[in-house]
Length: 366
Length: 88
Image 1 (cartoon, rainbow over the protein chains, first blue to last red):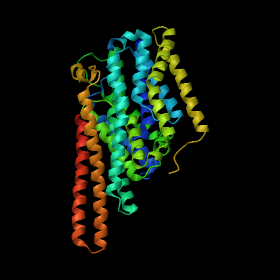
Image 2 (tube, chains in turn purple, green; image 1 turned 180 degrees about the vertical axis):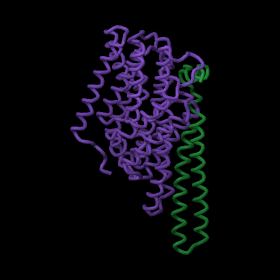
Image 3 (cartoon, rainbow over the protein chains, first blue to last red; image 1 turned 45 degrees about the vertical axis):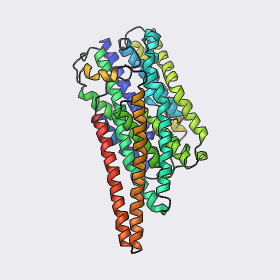
Image 4 (cartoon, one colour; image 1 turned 90 degrees about the vertical axis):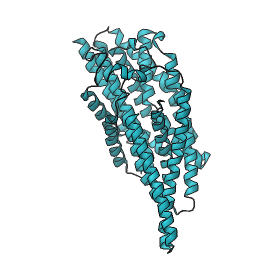
């Protein structure tokens, strides 16, 4: 009975993480389209939400676990998963509060790693996996996207140099709707699966699913798709503003180049089995599209803050995950710890939202 | 889905340099190609309209054909992207 209560809390927490993932990462997909007026803000997030929902159903091949490459699977218990999710959700909310686009995937990995260290020690952490799956991609992804964005915008400006601005703007705006749609689909496919994987792991750990020969339950797929779509529709306007207007002042050709670079990097890495963060890829593409036009066009101070948040994501989420596990373990192995921590996390989350709402909704004027 | 089918996703790797290089090259080619093709399509349609206004019909047809071919190339890239998304 206690185990079932913990499972319910873990599933609910995983869906809350999925919601914050959509909420936090909306900017990846819609920010450039909104800032270049290719789409109105509400229409952009509406389309992104629908495509994220659809994307979650496209493929469930990698809906395994996000953490198995980086920690010893034997160390993963429902309480560890819960503590890891709390770490990821808290970091997502903190970066949202400051309007910083950071990787939800890295937050989840960091949270779980921290919780595992608190539960089973550092021996349960796969150092090779963290290097290969997280750290190297974290450096490579934005650099590659930056380079592609920079080259692509130079190509676009050269080809369209002698045209009147009107048709060029209209053409690239139309292209942005398509490239933004591709990004939303890819995001739904990649990120909703992380939640599916987490819930499936919890179901296995609780004995609700066998360790072999199982199918991911339909309700898990539908719930994960719905949570990420709802989060996307709610829209993390603070991060949208940062991504769309604060890094560079974007025209439609730059928006298309950034989105095209992002889509190309994400899809190519999916094809070759190399995991990348969508957030870092799109931010890199946006910076590259700005620098390709003029290096001084990029607000490097804002870019520096974003990069700092990327480097902090893993250790910060790990610290929160470890602290969360430590807190729950004070109350023993039962459901008391997760219940109390959930209540505290809800209060913290509502306080952050209320504080931000009091300060005004920073929807772009566009 | 069996646990065995999940195994490749769960297998730990340090740095798969070959996959990394392939990803970088494919991303570079795809990202620049799509932008180039889209730019060419915009150039073609805009130029075709302008040529038509100036009664230069042959040039308009040429630019129009280039625009259509470039649009088809972009569409093919999108189809390839969807295929990759669905089939991994």
